[in-house]
Image (tube, rainbow, N blue to C red; front, top):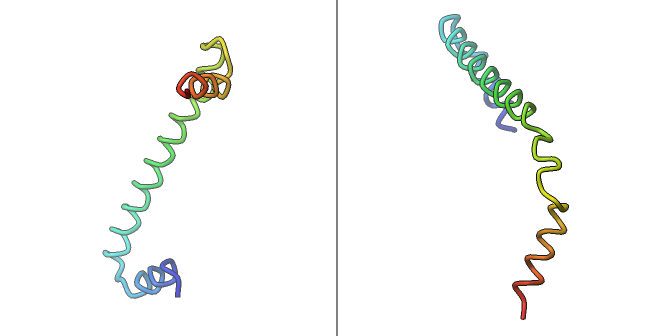
Amino acid sequence: MSRTEVIIQEINTLNSDELEVVYRELLKRLNRIGRIKTTLTKFRGKGENVWAQDAQEHINKLREDDRF
């Protein structure tokens, strides 16, 4: 049985007050995840054109310089 199925079975045994607590906790968690995703989306692509070369090219150059 999966963790999700076990949790659902446990939820089915809760009374209405306990369900309300679980519901509020889930909402808080989902809201926090949503805020994090929104924040990250705002920064996506902000580093473009900041560096003169492609990131992978830069790493490859560093690796070449590091080897004897």
